[in-house]
Image (cartoon, rainbow, N blue to C red; front, side, top):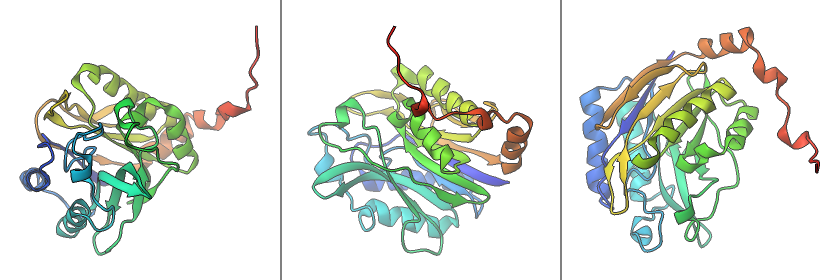
Length: 267
């Protein structure tokens, strides 16, 4: 078994130092065991600046050497945990909504992922990522995703085909669609027989409100832990045996067919 920690926080708009302090404060209050996995919300250091003229230039960090990257690396060393967090990076002259994962004892990222499905408001300023990423955590292979990715089951199935057993979804998901958030997280867990960690922010930014509702969901769709609309750290143990036993007892994945093998017909 392994323990995971989802940091549900009220992000201060474009104030990285304050947001770094909030992460540390919440983790200290919770107490963190070495060897765990810490997962932070989408653009945790700045808020969701995925809109034109919303602070993108000021928020940009080099994925390996910027202030956010340095914070994530230091947090991994301090806690003895894997740390997954994200912000804004560049590939060439294009911005990308990015996740990096750091491990204690290592000076470089062990995984990088760029959001494959930018939201409507992002698409004028952000380009899409073009590959699935995975990393090892305890006995699990983990695939990270970001917010709007959750609406597209094909990328989760692609990650499953890359042997993923645990999905993380780091989000800035608005209150107005909070029911979709909970429903889709559960669906991704059930249809892929995987654990799902969904971490959302709370509070508000200049554009919208956020309800939180971070969830840890088992491969059966059972909610192992949930956090309402307050700041805090959601924690639970995840056990690979639950996943392997479920796939043996109910081997639905063996019956799956790639969707692209079905020809289209006109009626």
